[in-house]
Each structure stands twice: as C-alpha cells, then as structure tokens.
Image 1 (cartoon, helix red, strand yellow):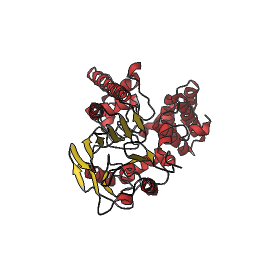
Image 2 (cartoon, helix red, strand yellow):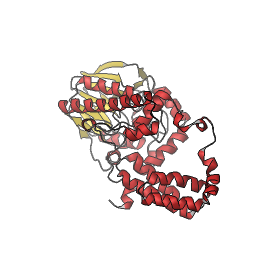
Image 3 (cartoon, rainbow, N blue to C red):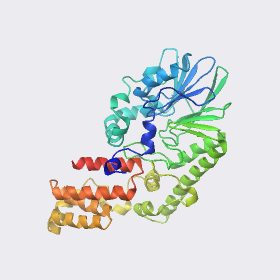
Image 4 (tube, one colour):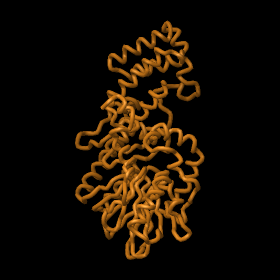
Length: 412
C-alpha cells in the first residue's frame, strides 16, 4: 500500500461498508421478505400483507436513494419505522419516510439522547468530521433538515403483529447509544440489530470513541450480546452486513462475550492490585482463543474506557497536577530553555524516531512545538514520528489511521 493510501480510508473494512451503497442499483433480498438498502447505515424493509416495517432510515442521503430502491420491491405503505439507536445513520433520513399514516418507534431514552446530541452538536460534529469526513461525504447528506421525533416509545420489550408477522423490540443498552434496541422476528429467527456490535461483527467494541461520545458500558455490552445469543438467531442483520448460520452466530457471539468479559476482569484485577492505567493499557492482551479484530475498537482503548467507567476521570498516576487546569504545556518554554533550546529537543526526538520509538518522540515534540510553534524542523520531525507510528500500527484500525492522517494534515 502506498503512503498516500495509508493516509486515506482505502482498504479499511468500515469505510468499505459505509461506502458500499454507492452504485447499488436495487435493494438486496435477504429472504423472509426482508430487503436491504446499503449506506452509511443500512436500512431494512420488512414486508407484510398489511404494509411494511422499516428498520432505520439511514442518513438523509441514504434515505433519498433507499426510498426508491424499496419502492421497486414493495408498493405497500410503510406502517412502522423502528430506530435501533440515536445516531444520524439511523434517524437522519426519517423525513423521507415519515407520513401522517405511519408510526416511528424508538426506546424511551431516545429523546434524551437526541437532546444532549443537539446540545453538543458542534463538538460532536467537529470530532466526527475529523475521523469520518473523507468517508461519509458532506454533512448535508447525513443530517436531517427537520427533526422527526418518535410517535411511540418503548421500555425493555415491546411486541406487535402486522400482516401475520410477529415483531419483538428488545432494549439492548450496551449498543452505541443507551437507546439501542434490536428487532427480533421470531418466526424467521432473524435479528436486525443495527450497530449493537459496532460496524464490524467479531471486532472489539469501541467503548469510548475519540470523536466524542458518552462512554459505553462493557458490562451492558456483554449483557446485550447475551440477549442476542439467547434468541438463537439463524441470521443477524447488522448496520452493515449479514451474519448467517445459527452455529456460526452462537460460536462468534460467545467469543465476543468472553473476550470483552476477559478484558473487563483483567482491568478490574489490575485496578485492585494498584497497577496504573497506562501499564494496564500496555499489558492486557486477550488469549489467542479470544482474539477479536481491532479494526474499530482496540483492547488498550477499552481498558482505558473500563477504568474511566468505574473510576472516573482522575488518574492518580498523573499526580497532583491532574486536579488543576494548568496543562503540562505551560512549562514547555522552561523545559526548552533548560535543554538549551527547542532545537536540541527536536534533535533528540529525531533520535527516538530512528530508534523506532515514535511515541517518545511525540512527547518531546509536543514540548518543542509548544515552545517554538513555528519551528520547521519540529514540524518535519513530528511528521516523521507520525509516519513511523502509522507504519508500526499497520494502519488497520480506522480511528487510529484517520486520526494520524488528520494530525499529518494539521502540519500542513
């Protein structure tokens, strides 16, 4: 892969899934009268003899295209729209499907999720664009032009029948938002789960994203995946892919549950033993039989998320200054002066890069560039350190690769 490719989303499965709707000419027939329209988040049309049920509207751009795809497979009206969570790739296209004659259903926490999302819109959007900007396209194709709120809010469980089909909605708060739920079709043994597993099945969940989100609970995630496993589905339709086969699903959901439980247990053991957070991030690794991919979430990040879930923001290992608003950068000019100038710090950072220690180099370069922000040598050294870090990481994790790519763009 070329250097340019490593700084793009090329070859990342998450990006491929998000962009898989481009060029899709027709809805995909998933059997059982279920049709799929791909996009930033997939939408599913479940057909019945008395009208259809739409699971997730997708983004606004997705919905404008998906509506036409679905019209080619069913002329029946959409009677109900179910939202599996409160992210824009589920609700963004509601206005394209909502009519006075249909009903939008969500979990009762959904309005609360939307309230805080709107209150922090600039913050969340800034973080999301930094990671996903070149993957999802323009913001005006994602977010709605008008807010469409649910007509009916459920608690832990809600069942209904339509056209001879049975539907069960089950709350799974371990998903990407606390209002997450799944749609269970008991007669077909099909579970439509949205992004309960994240965008990739068999990947470590991302319990606390760097774009800015409310932290997600490891324990709630395990409990929610256990709910899906207990249903014994023959097919799972996620926000991006179809997982088929009862034995395969049982084996993989068990491995996901056991892997996250293992990380949770080891993190708690380490906390009780008085081991500091960064040591635990470096040392906790799942055994081979519990290995999940780390293309979206990572074990080290989940260790940190678990630590903060149970222990809060204060990290004793960082000492007294962690309690105050004066950052380490405040002493950067003094450190540069003591070192004989920022140039000497940059030179040592270059040595770290040559030694294959880019993170140590970046620690030093943060000091040097805080002391002398216009240092061309400092910026070039930082570029070299970031490129070495990307090389060492393999560039397979979406968040890591796109963050480093954005940091390199910042240098320009």
